[in-house]
Length: 596
Image (cartoon, rainbow, N blue to C red; front, side):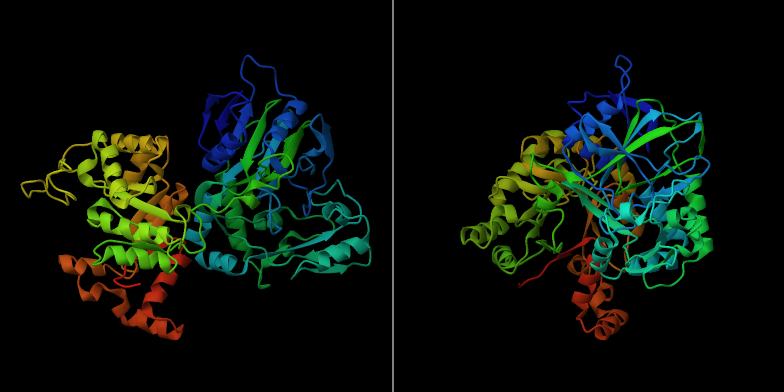
């Protein structure tokens, strides 16, 4: 079989066996590429609906019941099971089904969607796609007040449901089938259990439901064990505004903000127009199937002529083995996703051994070190002391170090990390970063360490170097177990693009200076959309640069009168206020203190 990355290069087909495209591989591909077309190779028979069912069943993903959806559907039996595959939305062919994340109008939508084409239509009928992050950016850039209200209040959806399926309506699913109940008593019990949901029985026997406020903008930080870190326009707002129209429903009254304020119709119309202008419509062929990451990509259906049979299946997270619950609900959050993302940094500290010990003792689990800090031996002693006393285990810590500028030549990279590991008395690092995109003349380890910015003659000498070759050497460190992840520090957008263009192992994180005097919004947005976690240092202003004559007291944010007034108003000290801003902005802040 072969796959095509639908949102990137629809002309490139990549050959792969069904066995190789297993649960781990498909999840990894969908975390990175969001949408795939899977098609039989030229020497294979076209995939049948049973091939489709057997393949998606082999992925061992958690079955997801179609509860809460508006569209009427029928179950399609297959060898793999009678409750696995449904018809896609069977709305009339002349109606466009607008863009949406599947079941975004409920609290926990499915993670993965699969579509299979049993018969393509004569014309049209494509399952059109759009990157949800692209939509988020458009709305955030053009309608910031609208976006702020969506983020703050979410959305409420209003729909009137019939007692029997209405196949002439794209939202004609009955309330019995929508909520998977057999009686009105059972239905009311289920609805009453949903906090904030309102409903009303209408005289003709239909049911009007006003959903509880549902989050409409989501930061997808992590999917299973893959770092994502992207904002998404994760809702059914446009689908409701454009498509929730029938004899019972008025589409213009189908949606409101979570605080019950009306949404501006002109804004909704502009968003819908943007989606239509930027969609990817790939013509179906018999036997094709799509694999979609429902958390990152939205889909729709173009109108069509002639008969069309497209089937769908939806799933939650991966199942580790038969009988287990989904892995997504069982996995211990990785060190990339922790309740407190604050990192303790070790640059320019007077007593790093004691400070490292006390930092761990006081609850810090993310520690940031570097060859250039010149204190990794002492820092390592403090870490070892904390571990020996049983304050925590090594696997509870997330320890970062960095490759210095003089060691960018690939032949020096392994030696550099081994020196840091030896000084820190660790068997492995959690993360190893290229400290700067600046390559300097090599300084022998036994002659001067850390080498700082100058060679043995006291001169700073830049040298030609391919940073991509350095990155390839970094990847080998992961291969041999020296570090779990690799990343970048002080890189700009162009530097990152260069590395991404050749990366076999993508950068996990980007570490940069960031504070209100240097917000770096565009760089942060670019990094997140490249699925790179952002970690920031000097969130209070560059106080550590004062001793280097690179900043002044006026650059320190907790001396700023506006910041002090804000802190006073919210009853926090200025340091806590800035740390809170960093966490709220969804990037981790680095703290550096003399005493903990």
